[in-house]
Length: 134
Image (cartoon, rainbow, N blue to C red):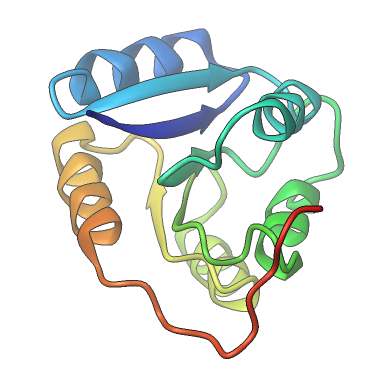
């Protein structure tokens, strides 16, 4: 069974590109806005990883990244950011929010796929605390 990857970006072209590049190894779910992405996460199982643009039309810049990386429910999910922000600013913000990897637009989708494969196949960090849905 293929692992699910959630791609969140307003760009229809990038959503299509990533679906095409990742289709052989992953099931790619796409969302154009933060609200659609969070609705999907709430309705189904958690994705194996998330690839997203931090500048979404329905949130403040980096707001969803901050939510995902500080939430006890989602912070363990590998997160890759793709953005047009200047390289130095992108690196700084990504480090600030504990993003697992980042790519500056334009990016090589094959490099992103390799990074995604590495992140998804990394062993999870064990925690003493286990969250359960009741």
